[in-house]
Image (cartoon, rainbow, N blue to C red; front, side, top):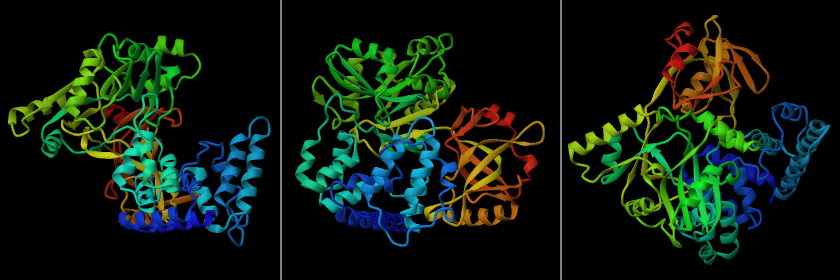
Length: 515
């Protein structure tokens, strides 16, 4: 298959909003692709390179986009050819590597048409945002292979890889689904949660439920088979060697076969309050001196679910049964704090749930998860049987620059660079966001920021710091990338504030005080 065909469908998917139409476009594409090509189609549409990071950034891309490298007059690049080119880029290392990467990228772009160059830029920069993510790609594969989407989703959950499952069903049909079962030792895609505004709203939606502390740590999935223990992250990376304390806890469990779902956190020994997420992330990310890092910041695993135990898969069992198994396997100190609401219509139980939420925040955690007691474990997407509730923080920041959009946002200024006021009268950047912007907001901010533009390098437009935006965010994290040493977590735009002058925007100090 030619890359041009994937680029064409990428543009088409970006141009439509109806999920059914997106699914139909992807199903047609998967029907045309060979089973061997389907993993690459999925990866490229979702904005991923199978090779991971390959050392190509904007400094290189600026040297190859038109007019620096003229596009090819007609499509010749195949998916296999592009994949081989990415393999070659990923293999570059040592002295002169930057020059060699630039040469290889120029060679690739010289063989690409205008549309293919655009897709390659977005792939290499991580800027593919056209809505053809795994959930929709899964539905497209299901339609192309004539298998029920629910059954395909379950297979992907158990296998942990849509590309592998897609190739199997497109090659062998529905019978291939029988191959995919839960096996201890092979990571499973984690179940995710939707966000709602309050605990009461969540209880009303779910009925009988459990309210659990939402810990601000690193999601882990722990597999044990005999003496073998493996630990995987939310993205299914193996981090066993970095977490010896979690391995030790797993080996203390009486069962020798299980899969546990939880978080790894760090607690202050004096207060019992959790350490900052960034400290935990740095500790988990340590690949060299694990012993030293453990001494500085010991970690504690806290589990909230069990997917298998004693040779039995439990993902189809209701949540109350899985929790009973979890309580049998682990002591209270390694299980998440929870409160069951068995009579959701009882005002006293609702009040108890709200108090649990307030107490959780007072203990330093980021919110709660409300889970239906009768729901199975459904992984790989955000189900409606797990609902998360977190306090909403807002701040008024100033736009310092904006990046040119891609896909549906081509022609607009999209990704905003956000700054808070500093003591010296300047602004310190606290992060970027393109989330929360409607089409109307994009049009308005593009017009306004164009008026404020002072510099344009073709990718980023620097503007006079005059436009204020109200930003919602989930918290702060330490960041050496930004001058204030902090960055907003999960920032999204709520509204523009043209009525508010920049000198009334929040300061770095006020953002720090808000947390």
